[in-house]
Length: 255
Image (cartoon, rainbow, N blue to C red; front, side, top):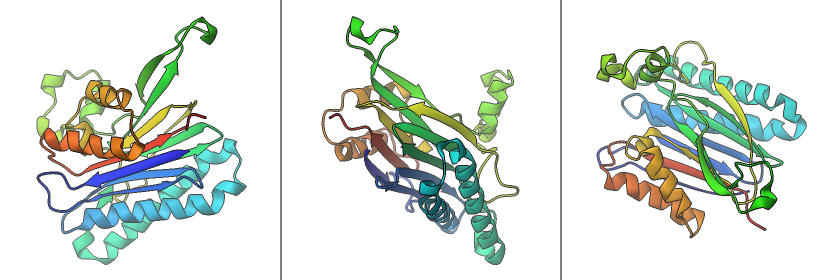
């Protein structure tokens, strides 16, 4: 695997409460978007990333693929309690929390666990709609692999019309690390082939750019992953940069 990342405070906020980690050697990729005032969000996201990375790095080699989900949830819950305990011991950190996307890539399989509204997408470079790839070159396919854990998305899923959902509540998280009981994360597995590209990102990117805009930027990219990551951040800033913007890109190299 090859990867790149970029993170930026955006054009409005002074502090960056996002945290990212890429570890190609172990196939571990993490992104967290912290919440809480007085720099507490920065603490929460950093605790989440460092704790999960430590647990996964120590245990992945001794874990079968069938048990990856259990290990990843264990790591996520360990991070939750680290944040929760820190918040209890420091009043300034009270009620801090964070979103988290955890991606483990082993043998060209991407295992994804998430809680909150940070997202993961997959761009398949040569997707074949028909079962026989010999019939011709496939087209790209762009798929969102995660669901936002927010009040708005939950109400939409329950059939509530968009115009009846209070705007102030729409982006309120229904699952996060650090507050109350540990979250019940979503889990998915996807196969990655040569040239396929994972995009992991905070809502600072997706609130500024539509899925169609993200798809176009990823599909048109010809340069390095580093340039693509910085280009995505620049595009979000050009649209206003109203929040911290973070991007992790993971690709199966073409050989």
